[in-house]
Length: 325
Image 1 (spheres, helix red, strand yellow):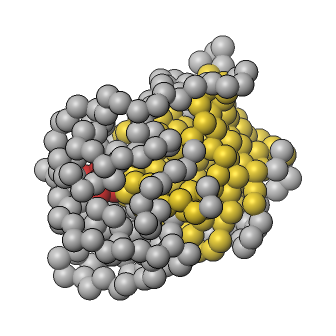
Image 2: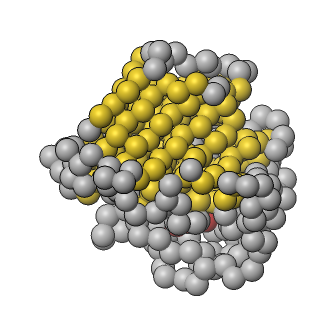
């Protein structure tokens, strides 16, 4: 393993069908084979904790319709068969991911849609899926909402659970690619179920196979660093069934507030079979790592989904694109 540090969609609809994926990550609440969803270590069980309401998106009035209670099971269902196809309007561009919503509270999709595939009230995106949290549209950008730890209903009118934000593409065929987006990190929070952690912030996911197998590039962290990690199934320190292996880390300040960062992360498999991940901010390379298999076994060479992870973070993003490298 080699590491290098520099300086420091589309119309959405309410449908019943949804793509079935193998147990994607839900941070501290992954789904076990039995269907049980444990909370973070030391957290109060969902059956006994009293949710602490937090304000819904402040700039978007929310209508609270009567909706069914979500259930945490994933039945195998057929994927959506209609909807516009993503195209490549420019050389090198594989896909662009607009943030669009037609709901009064501007919800794009949420964890309810993923865990309740047969519920007609769920809000489904054809290009995004979430295993935890809620994605809202705000001025053309994607927004986490003010994060809380409340399991959302079908429209996230009661809460958003975005303290644990897990968003990935419905496409799982991204191999050697660059992911680019603009990021506005508005600040960090804590909740009763999600106390402060050093890794709180925003990550990019690459080659996401499942909750057990992926690469993560930590863009903004509570501890003022950037980092690149690989997660593989099992290992000596399993988290949700997998162990994180650090590949690179460097000190890097986080510009909280109203500053938009231009973020880019790229991943490629090298001729010798190793995998290199580069992380850029505002056009400058801030961190690079090469996974040669010396940590956590062979590099992840198979294509997968890409996505954004957030922990205890109030953030917006826009202009999310995937390009070839």
